[in-house]
Amino acid sequence: MIVDASSIIRAAKEGRMRRLAGESTIPLARFEVGNAIWKDVRLRGLYSAEDGARLLEVLLGLVDLMDVVEPDYALALRLAVERGMTFYDASYVAAAVQRRTRLVTEDVELRRRVEGLVEAVSLSDL
Image 1 (spheres, rainbow, N blue to C red):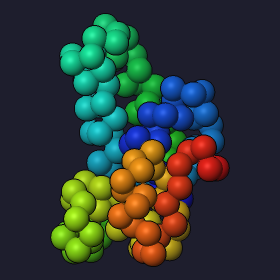
Image 2: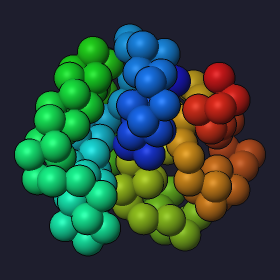
Image 3: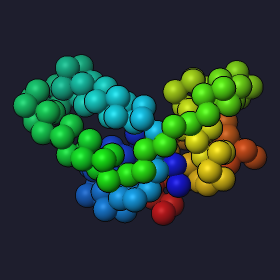
Image 4: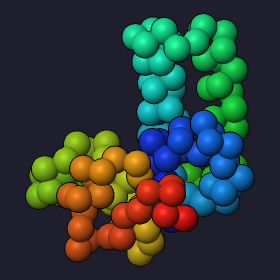
């Protein structure tokens, strides 16, 4: 499985991080996880910067337990253009296509856009 940042974050919030250990993601996940925490701290005021830093450490530790794979970036660009999605999202999709595996994402719109290309599921489907 290729797991995107939305599912990594959800797994952490629900205490299901062990479920993702050994699964795969792409290098971008680290940055997206950090950005999501930044939003929670800076824009939403959900917790302090110190708590955000601790959460980031935990989430990056989870990513370190995963197989971080490089997607085919040319394929990602083609998919982004053809399917009308961001290059970021298409990078996860390209990795799933390359590996002939499922994509795990909490993004309902992304799951819709990849229908017929890869099987896309939510963490709750696992």
